[in-house]
Amino acid sequence: MKQFKEITGKKIFLSGGVSYLSQELVNQHFRFAKNCFDANFNEIIIPTELCKDMADEAEIMFKCLREILTCDIVAMLPNWCYSDGSKIEFSWAKKFDKEIIYL
Image 1 (tube, helix red, strand yellow):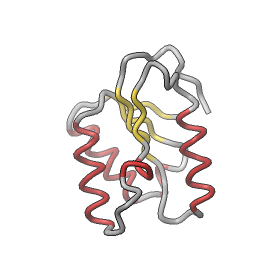
Image 2 (cartoon, rainbow, N blue to C red):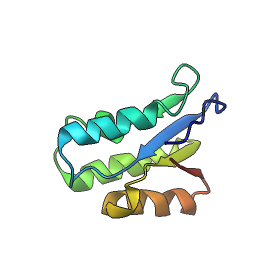
Image 3 (cartoon, helix red, strand yellow):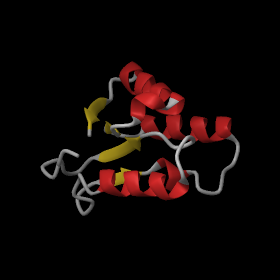
Image 4 (cartoon, helix red, strand yellow):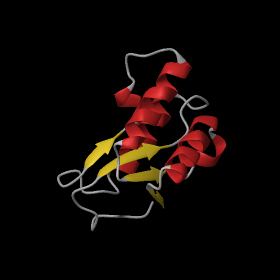
C-alpha cells in the first residue's frame, strides 16, 4: 500500500470490505491501512472498532456515514470496490466533498 506519512492533523476514515472476509483478514487489512498514515499526527477511524459492539448492518452503516461527515479524508482500501458498504461510503464522501485517497 502507498504511504501517506506527510498527511498530518487530519481525521481519516478507513473504508474497506468487511462482511465477506474473515475477522482476522479484516483486522489485518485495517491495521496495514492505518500504518499508511502517521497515527501520532492523525485521528484514524476504523469502522470495525467504531462499531465493534453493534450487530445490525443498517445501524452500522448509518454510524459510519455519520462519522464520515466529521472526517477530512476517506481512505479507500484496495478491496473497497467489492464491498457494498464501501461503495456507499465512497458515494457519501463524494456527495459531501470529502477528500478521497486510494491506498
